[in-house]
Length: 455
Ligand code: SAM
Ligand code: SF4
Image (tube, rainbow, N blue to C red; front, side):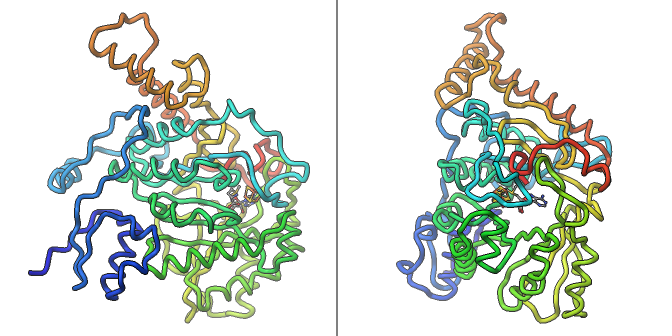
């Protein structure tokens, strides 16, 4: 008898690869390691029977925020039916629901892009000011418990963080709590080395920044070498997609007058045969990047340039919270997108929140209002970074309090801390402005350099 096809929501890339192998009758031994490591069994008659999968649990010592345990399909259906309204803490006064969190996991980078940071670099925070891995995981769980369903890791360059893969594994485990997408924004320099394990950890999307297809121009725009490594990463993502990995790939290209506008057409032409979405980004002003309106090429000007060669370029319907406007050239496999923050803002449907590397919540990329989650989180640890052991100690205190072994004068436990964090987050979200400042004012506004925000 043909076994029933039963696939969990949010199939992993490994699952997809196995499924593809089954469909093609491909021997399992030829599959990449990330696909073989899955625990699902496979049937060659194109049906996949599932054996129970153990999702990675919380890293030991990390307290679980109050989110429901994994439920059966029936229970989940019931939960959807009785779904509560979206978290009040993540809803602003314009009724925007923030279900997308971008976390900067490092301030460091292996490139020095002209538009992102000053040539002399930026002063980095002392290591103790940066969020630890258990702290990042804790905050991720807290936001997911409130309805965040997409997390993007960014930086600085996120792949330079040594423990990025274990971090992704732990965040990936939040799929069973409602996380649907785990994405990465990267310059691609070392992505090809870590990609397989990241996909295995649950990576679902890669935004790769590349501003030129010319290796010499690459060196001018990034002040470093590395073009070949980036291309290798793109090829590896495409290869894995072909094998069935469920990863969306987008290439981000910041266009600057006098530097790379002549590459707009070659970038569009990448999509003739490759399944890539290239997104052209209007150059934006940030601390220390010497922005000027003259160097910026507007969305309209980019459209005009493309239409001189491809007059049939046409708009593709988008989704509610898209930051980019998507277009296609008839007959091309890939798509073309535009991120138009400067000339055509998309604040009305903004669903994004950001956490900086030093633990500040930033409700708007172009606003300088920030509030520290790190300081509140660390209150119970004398202001010190919370590592695995410290989390374990604090959790013990919480359990002792619940069991009546402590008086109320002792430090607050996680339950109370969680409430405070949500109050602070909720208040910051409620202060979010309807839209960011206009082009003229943005230029003069104080903001961090982009590398310290996390794009
Ligand atoms: N290092 C990673 C990378 O480059 O993809 C992640 C961090 S980077 C700050 C995130 C994104 O911000 C990149 O796509 C980059 O091109 C974009 N970016 C940086 N500075 C910018 C600026 N001044 N205007 C527009 N986009 C910018
Ligand atoms: Fe580094 Fe990304 Fe900034 Fe370039 S854009 S300097 S790669 S953080």
